[in-house]
Length: 320
View 1 (cartoon, rainbow, N blue to C red):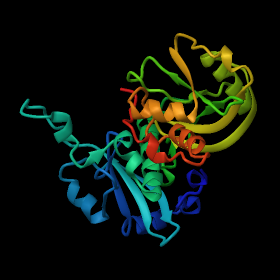
View 2: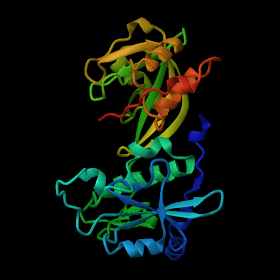
View 3: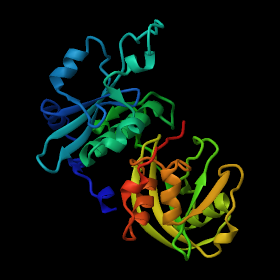
View 4: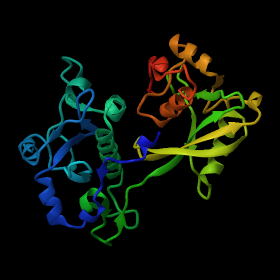
């Protein structure tokens, strides 16, 4: 799963303090158009505009904010995101699918993320994460003054007291629980679509280590104590501002597994053969390919000869 950890984009933090250089890069950049946390995209790739294209779109869109995303490690191509909205918001006249028509040419990460290549996914995650943060952190937490974007969108600055505010990232653990028979434990949340099962996850609390959080969350949600906690990988998850830290852990008493009845209403131990059958018949839905939960499940499933990712290509479902 190492592909999740190597970014194809150099974020260029050394360039953020050079306003003249950022302006120069903007003029040659590939630019993601961002509206309401949606990225300009087709069904399987981001679409980009140029600085000239932005100028032309200013007839319909406000000036907005620019976010410097970095440069490609392959060819040094600079990338920006342009966060904006319409000067005059589209009006629903009742003649068709308003939501679809309004956002034609734009996709949410949930819609397109699983189909993007590594570079596009990195850019999209960064763009949406910044957009979500800028939208929700418009004022200084010290004095209440309105802040402004600075350093290529990597901070917001208070013009009154000069405080810098940095993007918020909330750490959460996500855990693949196994037993001695090499089965995995999945759970169902009541807010999810019917039949959707996934791994267990939760936010890290103040003063808590990742490993402690793993043990607490799994016990709270599924009723089993875990040991042999092992780090696997991490993944940005801008819904709205999380970083998922993925672990594998073992349950010594799998027979104790039971849902807490609130966050989790059903738990299931699954062997590979049971997983194959349940997915094939539509008995369970797995998380989508964009998620580290899905990748952990697939990595476990394919670790034994005779089991392929293709076995798990049933219907996928997000929470509504």
